Image 1 (spheres, rainbow, N blue to C red):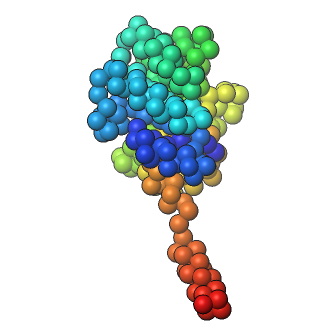
Image 2: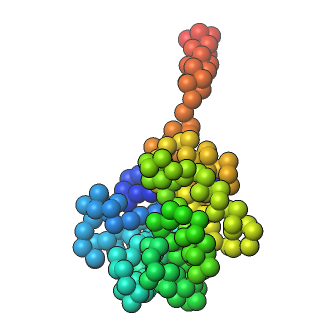
Image 3: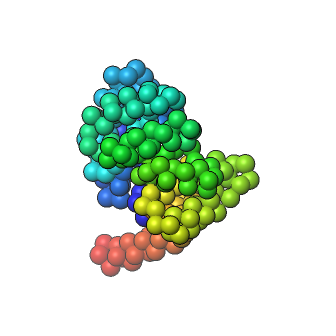
Length: 218
C-alpha cells in the first residue's frame, strides 16, 4: 500500500520523506489555507516546493466547479511539475473533466467520494485515483472501511485500473484497516504514520537492552 501524506506543511512532508516511507502527497484548499498559503502565484509556488521534496504523485486540487474552469486550472497545474495529479471534485461537471483529462493522458484524483456509485462513475470516466473519505463517513456513523471494500470489489469485478486512495484517514488503525482490505493508497497525517512505529513493549525492551549493556560496560 502506498503512503501519501495529507498536508501542505513542508516540514511534515520533509519528515515523512526522511523516514523513507512517503510515496506521495495530497493537498486541498483547506490545507493550503491552514498553512497561510493564499493567492494563485503563492499556491502554485508552494505546489512546486512540494514536488521538489517528494518523488511520487502530488495531488493539486482545482477550485472551479464548471467544466471550462476545471480544464483551465488543471492544465495550468500540470505545467508546474510532471508529478502533479489534477484533483477533481465528484460533481457532474467534474466527471466531464475526468473524461477530458483521461482522454489527454493527464492523471486525475476524484475527490469527495462517499459512495460506491460515485466511485464507479469516476472509474468509468477514467480517474487515476478515487478518494473515499473514510474518516468523514465514520463521523456520521457510516462504515468508511466498508466502503473501501465495496469499491475494491466492484473494481476487481470489471478490471478497472483506477486506484482506491483512502482519504480522511485519522489514526493508525485506519491505516491498518485500509491495508487489511487492500486499499491501493492511504493518505493521512504524519502523526498517524508515526503512531504505527510505537509500541510500549518496544520501549520497555529497548530500555532493558540499554540498561543491561550499561551494567556490563559502565
